[in-house]
Amino acid sequence: MNDLLLDVRNITKDFGGLRAIDSVSFHIKEGEIFSIIGPNGAGKTTMFNMITGFLTPTEGGILFKDQKISGLKPYQVARKKIGRTFQLTTLFLQNTVMENLIIGQRVTREAGVLQSIFGGRKRKGRQEEAEDRASQLAEFVGLTGFKDAPAALLPHGAQKQLSIGLALAGGPDLVLLDEPVGGVDMDEIDVIIALIKKISGLGITVCLIEHKMSVVMNISDRILALNYGKKITEDVPEMVCRNEEVIKSYLGDKYVASS
Amino acid sequence: MSTNGRKKAIIYSLLLLLAIAAPLVVRDEYHRHIMVMCGIWVIAALALNLILGYAGQLNLAHGTFFGIGAYATGLLMQKAGIPFWGALPLGCLITAFMGVVTGIPTLRTKGHYFPIATMCLGIAIYYVIARWDDFTGGARGLFGLPRPEAIPLPFGKEISFDSTIACYYLVLVFVLVTIVVISRLVRSLTGKRLIAIRGNEDLAQSLGINTMRDKVMCFTISTFFAGLAGGVFAAYMGTLMAENAHFLVSFEMLLFVMIGGVATIAGPVVGGIVIPLLTEELQFLGGMRLVVFGLILILTIRFLPFGIVGGLRMAAMRIAGRGGKTQ
Image (cartoon, rainbow over all chains, first blue to last red; front, top):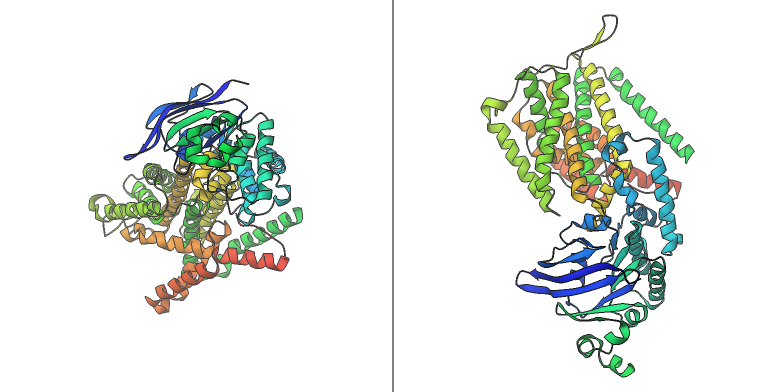
């Protein structure tokens, strides 16, 4: 339970003269739900982009299962079994739910060019396998009724569910969810929270960026708080919401009173 | 599903029969010549559609790769004395090699920068071909390229390619090969990866797709078939002009793909036949026919974003009264 899954060591990221992340260290343990909080511009998404290879840290390193992953390309990080969603819900909008979930799977990446052109029966078997798994994924994220709907026509909440399904399609050990309930209405928030718990129930480690404190405080095992690119604290929710600096920078007076 | 498949098989067989019978019905040489040219444009348009329609990368050097294939095949035949049947595959490989070498730097660019980069590439290569007098014949071009050598058959017979009709069937075979290879590719998992890259490159990467490798692979195959079209063109025409490698050729091919229907297999086939035929029929308009094409293109993009084939599919779907999909 307490095995170290992701180890971020003294990460710094500069964009020209701007220091977006300033020597931040934290770790994520296997099986936990870990949240990153902080006001706008705190560096949360920058942190996600560094973990997933979309940005290279200026200094410091990131270890996943004791292997260095900083400096790898995004597709290489994904193949180490790290899935992610994007802050602006990112889907293959022209494709259906099923097509999205088929594209997202590992098998999709493994057929070579020559096999694609000359391959026969084996190819068909794999395609059927991918369809079965896509069906299971659609059911898991709660989109059974939308299987053949184009992603572009889904309601916003369902698009969020599909983006999480895509992040899960590669069979990840760690999923990073960038504001999974951002812009989603109240009923749908509960659906997505339940989904996150279900993912965690499968033994998949979850790391999320979230603004809604009620969500973060309820489901997180531990929380990292960032402000202006610096780490304020990394602790269990009960301690984080008592931390004065966190309250000052982010939570407001309400949480001081309730604690 | 199976009845649908059977219906498709019947339609394809009929179209193939039509293609085989066409030159027997059309008896004058001039129109047979246009039919050969249509076949060559269809191959080139299918190749452009692979990189544009499926991987979503607008390669504005496509016409230049057609020219590279034509010149490579022509020069191998004329200067190295290699027979057509050896020069053509070598010409395709040289074109594909140029595709890899130029694709690796240009495909790193995103958005509008890829079309800009490839257009610059096309212009640069055109001037190399047009000015390298000692090697390519410069503005004068290459003359007297041999036709494909006859294929020997048992009992002392042979298939010779002296007649236009024989060249037509040769081109038809190449068209069919191109259709089979490209349609298998785009329907495979590799094709799904390409469509994913077109849909959203960042998302594709986050799913573990090596987008750069797939784009380069797709670009290479696309340029290979552009080279095939060029090589066949060189041997069929017997002469090559620098104009055949002009960067504006890319735009003609783009016209075939856009009007025929992007991201479908049938689209480039339709576009590669309809537009050259229309060009001939509108010959009497002179320069004004370009205005007509401009108008057709604007109307197509406005009302039929997926071209003639996309429009027909929409109509069929409405008649059938059920949802369908474009690839």
